[in-house]
Amino acid sequence: MITREQLISKYLKFFESKGHKIIPSASLIPENDPTVLFTTAGMHPLVPFLLGQKHPEGKRLCNVQKCIRTQDIDEVGDATHHTFFEMLGNWSLGDYFKEEAIKFTSEFHNKILKIPLENYAVTCFIGNKNSPKDETSEKTWLALGIPKERIAFTESDNWWGPAGNTGPCGPCTEQFFWKSKEKTPKKFDPENKNWVEIGNDVIMQYVKDEKGNYNLAKQKNIDFGGGVERTLAILNGLDDNYQTEIFLPVIKILEKESKKAYGKNKEETRAMRIIADHLRAATFILGDNKKIAPSNTEHGYILRRLIRRAIRYAKILKISQESNYMQSIAEQYINFYSKDYSELKQNKKFIIEELEKEKEKFEKTIEQGIKLFEKIISSGQKTVSCKDAFLLYQSYGFPLEMTKEIAKEKGISVDEEGYCKEFEKHQELSRTASAGVFKSGLADNSEKTTKLHTATHLLLATLKEVLKNPNIEQRGSNINPERLRFDFSFDRKLTEEEIKKIEDLINAKIQMRCEVCREEMSPEEAKKSGATGIFDSKYGNKVSVYTINDPKTKKFISKEICTGPHVGNTCEIGKFKIIKEEASSAGVRRIKAIVE
Image (tube, rainbow, N blue to C red):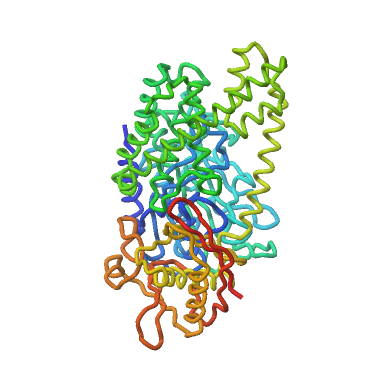
């Protein structure tokens, strides 16, 4: 039996032995990235360095990154999908390339983890008009002992990126493990669900530009990612991630509270997996130092959806409303992960309180939904229409399973086929809306974005000055070429006079022609020098510090740990204008601004 801790230790030690520096996991809430609400992969925080900026720790990096992905939220409930997961990652920033990367992956999988070659298969890129067939990867795998029958070529599944409309991208080669107890087939079929993906080497050899052209990158990179949960399951001979040490104690809590056995009934097992998954994701989002709370917008909306979905499935399992299962599960995850993510323990009170608050709010909403359901029944209908079923889902949080269960008790049916069509329509609208919100590329280092990014440094420093509060902290930022959005800790609305004063002071600092300097130093040195940042174990051995200096006094106006991009002098920013100041969440205000 191998534990999560042992797997992670083996991974980091192996890549450290190959010259990689271990870097910390970044926050789940990306900084200055308009393309995603959450960090979905280890490469997100590294985009400036994938584009050529020098990383303080060098050209070879590795880590374990906490991630959230919600695009497949409705698939959670099977044995392998998760919304929150940990990703093993290693990177070459313009150092080694394709062949060496594949050799490292093979050595780690087949020699360090001892995954037998007879249960191992890979895919490579088949080629298209933008990039040729990846014969180099195929030759490398063949030389490493992978038979030709175990190498499959595909197109869409073997091309990564860019994350937005522009940025780094390229072909990839994925690694698979045969999870079934049945004999491994000689020929590899990627469509066979018994083959589980356990790793992916992305070969970032292109940069897609705004015109849709794929240009060869000046700096070619490697980005490997592999899921901790899946890898841990296969190493322990399990075909169900929820039977690993990560989830088993939580499953036992749910078995006790529901008086039902995991694995006995398909729908009940699915419900337990959804609760275990969603409450883990919610615990990590709430536990992040950005202090995201449930709400009806952006990060808070996703968080609310996860918590409420967990509650709905707890009702399907007939877990008592008085049960403190949510707190017990959150505490289990906090205890399990706190060694690696100390913020969970630090924010434990916030996590538990917000879960309980959301549970109380949702209970009231469910009561309203039940009343609507009773109205439908009393009208004499023999079938719950697709529109009513979907209304119960969308407005009151009833999953189809809950609607069917109540309908069955009342002796009527549900228009499932019509509901599914309504649901598909809803998903398409959601996808369209998301595309509209997140237009920019992940790697948008345009001139306008660079100006706005530097302006956020001046904004934070000026907020502290005008509001006479040195403890104000940045709680999030989202920048695209049109505007900046900046969230900060403050508990009241700003007056018109304060907004005007902030705007005027920032413009005065811009006109002072202040130089923007970058230095590399240890987190301890950065703190000692007066740089701002959350000083915890999440920083690496070296950080980039950007200082905006007053040319007259020679004292710094702003000094922050940051990765960029920045202008060289404040005079390049232009005129700063605040267009809106509003509440973001409890104790957090939001400013939207532009530069002209």
